[in-house]
Image 1: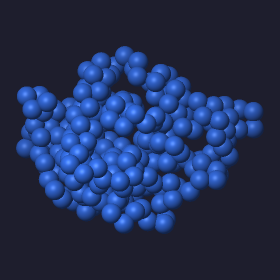
Image 2 (image 1 turned 60 degrees about the horizontal axis):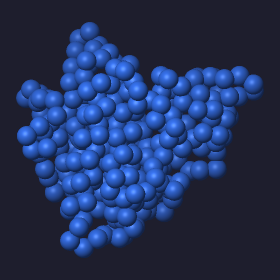
Image 3 (image 1 turned 90 degrees about the vertical axis):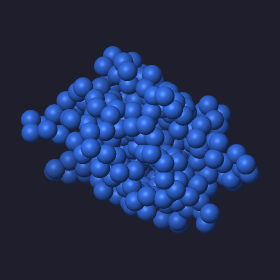
Image 4 (image 1 turned 180 degrees about the vertical axis):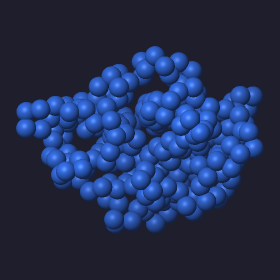
Length: 252
């Protein structure tokens, strides 16, 4: 891994994605990785705060994808599959994916993914920053009460193995992700992404410009869109925020 990746490592940083953006200004090369044991200003989708205390694994991967803006979603999708592989290799615990970018174990969220792009004047991506936050070990004081669905892979720190396990999670992720990324245009990974869907059969709500709609999740299509059914009609959602009925929204 040392030969292929340029790695910046921090004990604490505001945001690994922010640091990766600064590296972009200095001509960072693909496969540059920013790693931190703790973030003070981690963030998730839609500008939410992403809890990033000690015990987690937080890193960003700098990419120069050959795609249009719409194609960036497949980086997130590929990363979700790669995270599942990495976690399962390290913990032997089965992972599921909550569309679009969350990883669940036993009904609780253990990982979030955030892909951000830098665009040229024509609107095409010049680079992408793939941010991954994994709750490897339980936080010292547990998770806040307002995050009832947040959880960690391991319930307690494992003496003398904590650093090793974190490093292995990152190493396994990078290997799995780039195995997919190097042939990302064939989209073969979407089949597994769909098979791992945490939402299949669940009732959700989502908003349009006109109203909030309640629908049943039917699955994931070949474009990684969420297929839902409401009032006898199916619709494929390509983006947006969904809420599982009976489960509180959260960002860890």
